[in-house]
Length: 484
Image (cartoon, rainbow, N blue to C red; front, top):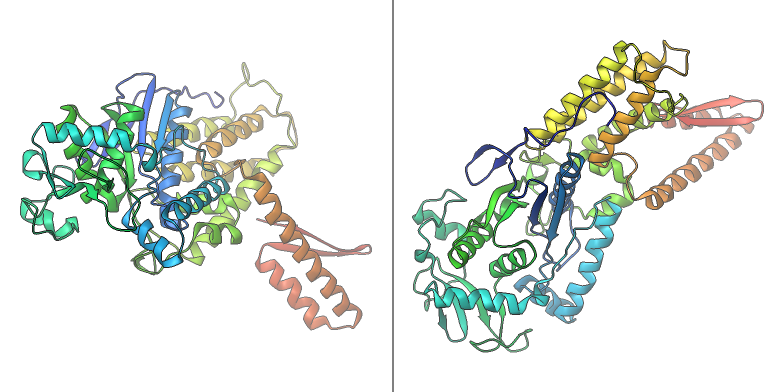
């Protein structure tokens, strides 16, 4: 690695929602990290709030790989659920068709955001046998019961129920949003198998035709692909209770083993101070945002706050992200002009080289401390500022500090996915559209100048300048460039 700072696996800390404190990260296997991330319920396109959770998981994996770990990431798709059934009925299509189309849209939108696919994307409908086996295990242990073809989990059989959400027994029911069912032994009991209703998708089971409950799906899929105990379980903070609480209860009672060693919950994205969500009817679809902003701008915005802190979606924040990335891109473009093949070994360290080393140490410290992307970005842009100062004072293109700075910025920015993402085709399309619009405005401005309409000419020039596009009039015509 460049930068003079050795990357080691030691020293990482993760905030564990289960213990509610920072803990040293020690995976079960010193070389392999297992991660399960709750994916979308594919009844609609994903919104920016969903995207934040998926992006944080992507960066966690990228950084662990940067540290030298092998990582196996499993991210499920819930493709059978009340929401899917209800939405399909509204649209007059089958639940299978709706889930398939929205599942494909999720992969398309994720790819546009530069999110690398998980190692496994299990679908609930493809794991019905595993769910039935898990439910039967719990029935055999007396932790579940059957009523009219539905199977319910006995919450009172798990003494530690509530340990993840840290809720008192009397508070658990209020937050569970469970269906009112007088047949249940305890109002807190939740369904693992739902008896078939007319017209709904169903599968055969020992208790009759039906479909799985939401919570049993993730337990079965996680254990199928990662084993009884996984290192990291991630998801949005809204899933902490009841979904993740119920996953723990049924998984740990069934196996007798710890289900997940580290629980990570990503805070809400907000809009106008209110949680963004489909139920609130205030959401911005990821695909719409990506139509208006380059990939790196959206990524930068979504990681500009620590993942456990709420983040407010607004035009000002996105504009700031766009401006920051212009500075970054301009810096990297300038560094490309310098000789990147210069050897740095054996040379006397310059002040800029010291800055590079400090930046890499700060970046690593930030990411080692519960994946603090906000501080990591701060380290990157501190180096950008120092590089820009040095570029104005140095005429020698073989200065080894610039090669070192270039490589370090590339490495750290690619960990965060804010430079050189896998979405070049999409970004090239955005750039092409921008260039065509600027050229059109220059043609309109030239027509105005020929009419001696200096007011219109100056207005176009000044407005473009506000957008960081500088116009220069020459004998051959107007030229333009993007400035920081």
